Length: 104
Length: 236
Image (cartoon, rainbow over the protein chains, first blue to last red):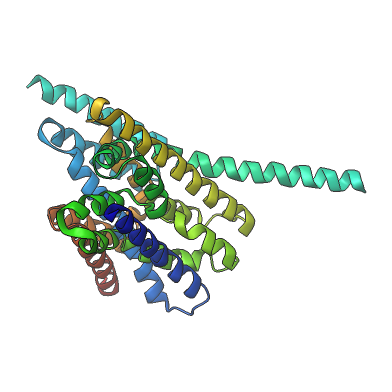
């Protein structure tokens, strides 16, 4: 029962956090600087998730392959590579390096 | 006249399906990338809440990290602690929705309310990436809803599968797909100096604060990234 209550309240709170800015800020006049700050905060959130998910994928023998794969993917991403190409390239680097590291 | 009207309806329906396909196709790699994460969540939820809490909760919270943190915290710290933890982890949604409010300023209110539950990292990134494309508002709506629903169906199905099969599926190496897919979403911003600095600072802070209590490191990273990009951008 406690789990249900917690999940329900977090669900409602999450909906409020999503819907209130969408409904109230749509036609609000925001300065260029504020708009840029909001956009950068969103980018920062995704960047933080990339770091956290990389960290959880990088442990023991997968540390070097994971970091190298994300490094290669960052370069390709900056060049505007498609998601499929980026995942394929990063995955190939990860697999190749993992095979090398495992031999050691 | 009626033939013309029928042809127009057929064309409109065809365009609508084309938008739906585009939305589903654009999110599909991320649905696959999140499979290991969803399986892990399913395994944990099977121990803590049961299949209904798992699947219904997935749609209610629509954020795997917050869902996982909430369910885990109930036993460790009680309901109040679990609620605070879950909301902290999902606090970044305020930033995403504030950004989308500008992107969707021409959209009707019903859409903003209906689309709100589907706002999460991949759908935000997708909507922002498609924002400069010359799409009409209806096409934009169809693409977002199709992508969000496809993500939800894929994720909740995988959570359910994780609850059933538990840790019997080896997923050690699949986790790398998540950062790779997210990088594809924000990669082009790395070419812009201010944005690249925001991304770099946020990633560094998140890496260093990964062991902080749930959600707090993420918030520190968001604030740090936003401030860094802004102040350096002004100076340079």
